[in-house]
Picture 1 (cartoon, rainbow, N blue to C red):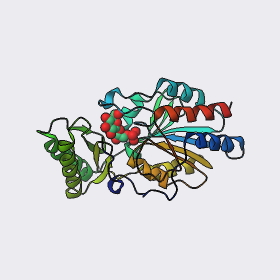
Picture 2: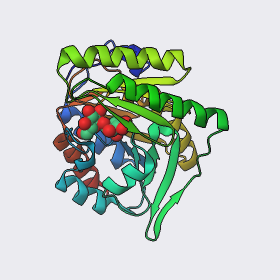
Picture 3: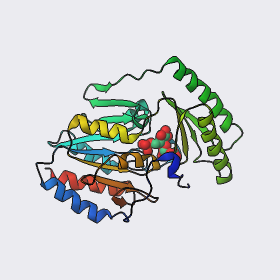
Length: 278
Ligand SMILES: O=P(O)(O)OC[C@H]1O[C@H](O[C@H]2O[C@H](CO)[C@@H](O)[C@H](O)[C@H]2O)[C@H](O)[C@@H](O)[C@@H]1O
């Protein structure tokens, strides 16, 4: 897996200072949570690569069991709001994400919004204009042509986008496929997001930063913790301020203040929140 260039995936260049480690993050979380005046704290988390380890088959992704447990414990806790902010299509995210009622779900990088309830999903309707629907159909057909004959390259379709996946392809096959997909997006006037082994071509441009800022405003959250592993999460980091906690999961250039190694460390940070808010 190669890290895509942030130019097409996210807005930010690297910060001046190197991100701080998991220990510094835990300390800062404890400080923030000790101040009852700074509630609600919005815990907003990317899904793939952040709560759920990356796998070859996106349908078999799952939040780490310890993560499911700690999220369940945080559900409905006073002063804590939970959100998943993902590139996944909403139906897909809802099916895979074992999260407690009350959790906000942001899907398709912000094009889809919903809230988990005890009775099911309360979901905003997404409607495409006929021009957008036509463009999505053309993108689907042309993306299929990009994948055709290329071993390990396949196309996922979402309500507002198509995704060219290259994780299973050799590098000399994946690189040209990603470049062709990006060129296709430019040719058909689609929004493009270049994530980890994926090129997303969307007819309803959205980004995690705008979606996160809107959710924060609605909730009136003075503090936000956002954790994400991909270049598309840089939009979310860029939308947050100096009092927020931005956490890059894994390697790669980032504007986040903290860096942790993997999903197990994200779960550990959530456990800090769980203990501090009992
Ligand atoms: O914003 P996210 O929650 O990180 O979702 C981004 C994309 O995630 C999925 O693809 C990624 O995870 C797959 C499963 O681990 C992996 O096979 C793929 O290489 C990753 O890019 C999903 O399939 C995409 O639709 C999401 O946009």
